[in-house]
Length: 507
Image (cartoon, one colour):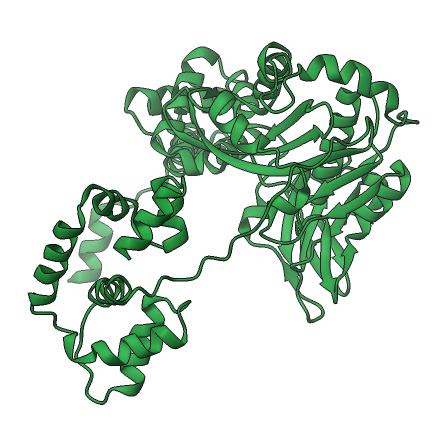
């Protein structure tokens, strides 16, 4: 192995290239290159004199590696367990080091499957764009971690880029929306779109035939672009390897604070115009923006507006905030139904999830499709009213009290103490304000604020106690008036007998 390292080095290979070719650690390659032949022989002699726990199995391992030089250390470990009765218990690292020792000693390099790459000719203007997806953990202003998901599209000839960001995983309909945003940004549509084999766009691969999801198939037909999917786990087969995902992570997202999706996408557009599409590209030595000015003349025009919801099935929402799908009832959030009629749209994913969207194309529910019949699907989470945001709910609720600013501070304290249950707490208080007089609620709120009571259920108990106390006060508040049939009856004096009459009877 020592001589092979030096031979490759004389032929002009760098240590990193040698380490990959011979499957050796780069530090070992550098150590061998720094040794003279005498030093190497002394090193081998010292190594051979070490008491190796696997030394009795050297011939077995050597023979197996000669028969199968591609074998990994894990495979060798398994062969030893399989073929050597009462094989000693050693850890994986010991086997790995021993296999490496055998390879070095007997010159059995692990074969390296080299893949040849050639520079691809530049495509014609307007021919192709490439799409990819990424994820990144950002930091919020509060110091919390926030995972964001993003879509990228790049014109293959101009290297002109576009990104779209959101705070949740993409659904098929959101991917279609991102396409529409990108085409509007590019001011046209390329002839061919290149993708990885993503489950959002594909149902399956049937003996080489790629089956698109119904929603994306309809979209591609409507926009009249061809679809090409590269092989799984093989981004190089895209042709031009444009690592736009990594570029965004380390040139735009890293070190940036997350506020919300709208702000992030606005900052992205500014960054694209300022840097990503304005600086000279390292491969083509041209500025993407200037190349785009040429390429956009070769893009197909965007004809009409496309509504992604047109590819989805429509369902009426029942009054109990459920929809029916194949014999079962699936919950949507409380407050979704609005009389006289509310319509939602559904999408079925390849992993048998039923995604439900509202009229604004916003995802409001997701359920695993139940195979049976007659069941109601969806937990207690869907029984909560999500029609208003938390901030909006706090603002509307606090405005009903006589001191709204103080009440809002009270709600913020509840949110800090119970962030996971803030909506439930507010909904309970909202129910109390709709049931009891606001004079009572103001009295209860003052009491809770003064005594630092931050539970809606405790507030409900206090309301009931105050109502009960008030009822008792009303009952005994005035003197009791006695009404009789004869108003002069109390003035009547009954007849009396003389005491002597009783004495005569007793004698």
